[in-house]
Structure formats: C-alpha cells, structure tokens
Length: 362
Image (cartoon, rainbow, N blue to C red):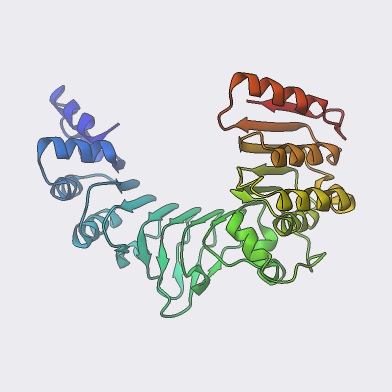
C-alpha cells in the first residue's frame, strides 16, 4: 500500500492510528514524488520524518526518484536511518545530475537479501561481506577503481550487471551463483570461461551483442577447456554477423545441459547484401557445428520479431537442427495482419527435425 494511503487509514480507527508507523516495506517511488510535488513540500524532509517516526523493523526500503533530485546528504541520511532496522531489501535509484556515491552504512546491513543499485558510484571495502545476500543488481553503476577488492557473497544466486564500468576491479566470491546477466558491463573472453569458477557453475546466462563482440576479440577456440553447466542462454540485441554466430555456437556446443535459447531481438539485419549472403553461406556449411549446438534445445524464443529474411533464415536453421525442440515462441514487434498471415504460413512450411515442435507466433 502506498504510504500516503496507509497514513490516511490512521483516521479511521484509534486502533489503526499508529499502525502505519510500523509498515515493514517503505516505497518512495514516482507516485510518492508526484504527490509531494503537488502539495509543494520537501520530499527529503517527509522521508526523514517517516523514518524517524517509524517504530517497527524496516524489511524493505525502496527509493526511486526518476525525476526528483535528492542531494547526496539527503540520501545518506535516509540510508543511515533505514540501515539500523534489520533491512532485507534495498533499492536505490536517484536521478541526480551526478552519480550518487554509495554510503558506507550500507556495508553494515548484514541482513540484506536483495540489493538493487542504479546510477551510483560504489566503493566496496576490501573483504566486504553480505552473508545473506541472494540477489545483487547494478545498473549504470561505476566501481571505484583505486584498488582491486574482494566481495564475499556466500548465498548469492542472482547477479545482474547492466551498463556498469570497472566491474573488472571486483573479485566476487559467490559459490551458489546460478543466474548471471551481463549487459555492456564486463569484458568477457573465452578465457574467462576456462579460468573463472563463476562461469563454470552458472545455469542461466544473459549476454548482449556487445558481450558477444568482446568474445570475438580474441581467437575463438573450437572447444573450451571445461564443460559449462548452462541450462539456458539469453542474448539481447543480437547484431547478426558470422563471428557473433560462431561465438554463440561455441557457448552452446560447450553446454551439454542447455535446453533453452532466448534471442531477445535481432538488430541491424539485412543492411547489406554482403553480410546477409556471408551469414547464409556460413550456416549452410556449418551443419555439424549447428546440429551439435542445438541437439538438446527444447525451447527457443525469438523476441521483437520483425520478419526480416535473416530472422526467417535463422528460424529455419534452428527448426531443421533441433531434434528435441518442443516450443518455438516468436513474439512479433509490430506487423500488419496480412503480413502476419504470410509469415505464419511460411513458418509452418519449414522442415522440423522434431516432430513435437510447436510454433507459437504472437
């Protein structure tokens, strides 16, 4: 329940008069800041007052100001007040002109299970530990690069890095990590998969086009030194090229347990006849590699589908080389009804290696 509505309930009954002071989850989002703007009051003052009057544990504190500016001092005071209440879930997204420097008081929150930080500078003290943290999300964040640090997260299961810089300066110890998402944040090479234990254990990996581009910056091996434990691979904004396709196939071929492939969007395709012809030529000659990569895949999803010839050919190749395929889910971006019918008719005509493969076009 939004805070302003919770506060209003205090007028309905004497028994309820103090209950809103004990709300375990405090959410200060666009609705709150819009309300404060309408009444012409100070958001920082109201947040501090609520925190100082709060009498129960604060299990969740979410401060998301997409347009409203809060000073470094204001945010620091809020975090200090919230950090002493056994906080478990913390979200910070402050829309200041400059990146907010994360308060040191956060590193004393030993009960944290979920931490989501956006548009901030993070200075991890060496040996920082969050013994109960299950999920860590960093977006548009910068890591202090003055020295390399170790971050100990024994219970971490999900790590998401989106548009972050200098992540390379943090050594993360997370033996239970299973979900890893890296979008324009970390320079990954195939060497990482060979030497970094994190990459060997994860079950669900999400990369974007720039990550695949980094993979191709070094010589691509036919085989990795180790087998990966991946069960699903998601690629966002895949800019089609032969080298990127080779990189993706290498990951798939070295993941004997992989059953789900998700391509969120194929971008910048059919721009030149040369690149399209080059791709078609490679895939027609690499049947062995493609078949090995797709031999166990059961579910494929293609998002933001535009119906280009390259996308259609990619679907044709996947259907023809996936003997275990059960579902091919194609989510269109925007198509006219007549064009949708044409595409569906062509898709149904493609050869399928799996007799159980179902095409769902939405």
